[in-house]
Image (spheres, rainbow, N blue to C red):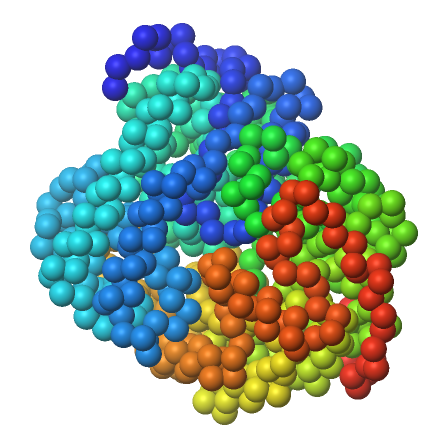
Length: 585
């Protein structure tokens, strides 16, 4: 790569503070409905401390999106309809492993990466995720799509680095952009060795948990990454930039700041000014970090540490400021759970001089079983409750330490739906110990609640050697094995483990397919595209007199929606106030 400036002057003297321009970048494929909250928070925090920060979001690039669409269109031809299940969530595992293998083969050529081993791996990826076979011709087509992606990404990175000329490049890595992030870091170091490369992101809460075999191998394979920030990033990144952390150190965690966490009462407003806001369905805000619960399969508390929240009045002021800046009335709250603040926030917003709608994660606790509460929340703008219900089996719920019951689930869902709040539900298939009887209980409860479910999404249980609340326990209780052959580790970089005891992987995916077919027969959607969302909203409107407005209504820049203030309470469903071990907030 040629340049009209010197990489020795464009970069960082590691003996000094990092005072150069900071470029924060999110690469494809970032799948959430909102711009990156993490990068928006970092930009505002570092800017407050005098740093020049630019955020770039490659996910708005139409060429990258076309690659995604083409790859899944081809997968759709390979995988029979009755085996597609939660097609996109399963398919992203195939796509990302394929992208990583392609990167490894091209960038780190060696004897272990022969064309034969590589092609066999692509066949294996399809077979062990969808349990069907791809032809040689189809694998060739898949490879051509991946090659096109890297050609696009190479041009994108060259153009971006030439334009911005950063001294520090910070990339957020997640499951969906693992390979693209590695490629970008490597190309950056090859062409501009003076740029300091810093990595953060949610992947350190599961696949790259500190201390895991994956993490140690990752460090060996990524000499082009100068520094890695694990967990909450603001304080660590600031101290790194100020030269207050050892420059020769590669990995920084909360231990390097004596466990200090950010005081949310003084955190600045997230800065979304560099994002293409119309590209996303809604904007984002947050009221808390971490989680007051420790469900067995989750890594939220492992990643964020101590739970803390903002005052509701302050959150409302932040929402007002975001509305003034960007004109959005609809926000996805990025909290793990809204339960600790949902009532206070609803009261504050119901009395505010502006109408804001908000969407977020809610637990089916006793408060959600009270129709007086759900109608208060709706009048305060609560738009959609995203609920990790996980299972309809009381035995599995207890194994998960969910501290809710199937009866609570049904009553909470009924009262939310009665108020018109959309109920997006998430289910885990194949949790350790789940039997066929337990799975049938999940299908049964979904059928009972069908008219009160806005959507139902399922995912297979995923096991990580470290990082989950119960990783150590599962390791003691059972054996684990590699999903893909150990011989392809150099291609995949990240190994995937599965538990040997109990239900097998193929049975888990069979149940997943049955779950999807069951919901389809019942007419319960799981929308991904705009046409699917429109159909889901129309169904919700027909089912519920108090239905929240369709998502498309918030895309009209000239409209102002305030129907929530006028919602009248209808006759309630059965109310439950008793629960088993619930927490009070």
